[in-house]
Length: 314
Image (cartoon, rainbow, N blue to C red; front, side, top):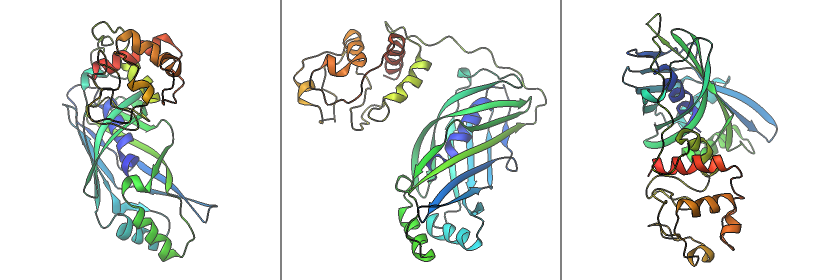
């Protein structure tokens, strides 16, 4: 339940704040909040949150953010105490670390907004969890940036390793059930001591990779359609294989992955750019009998962008 509680908003905000040169940005704890919901007895909805937030973004893009788990507020004192003891196990804090690439971001004018793709690591209960999401960010003043969730985030207790703690809460409160997936919203405000932030130089044009001429940044967004089954990280597989270095490689040959369909294993395909275009447009048409359930990418420009992104990550 903590995985995206802090990560998404803090790191996205950091990205926009970091667009100004040579500034250190500080999280305004009074103006920032992490909120999450729960449902008990299948019909009683309740809102909770954390108020103890702190953090900074240095002028070189280094992000350090903490959330005080003891600041949890459920509007019932005994429940606050039980969550701290049984769910958070007295851990005290969760921590976020990330590095922002300043060159990828433009300085926002006052009143302007953007969507930001961000990545980082959340340290919670002794586990480091990789995080990636999209946030909405707006510069509300020359030295003040607001970031919120772009969509609701739904988090599972199993993912965060706190299922046993929720079971204990049910036992203590004598409840028949508490939902194991929680909706989360984030509001973060960062401020700078610099009264007038300098705009960073314009971002470089979209990266082009070898013969693949798509837009890498757009391809990263398009890849969200693929993330349920694939990654672009070497050796990291999901229900489908990693796509790291896939361009130019034979089909059904990714090292460490052995769950290919018989159709793909016997297809004798080499994943040239042309072959990948055909497969991405119509997987079942390109390889009869493939187990891939995805219906395909309909727009040719989206395929260009996807290939550019996959190539850039390889």
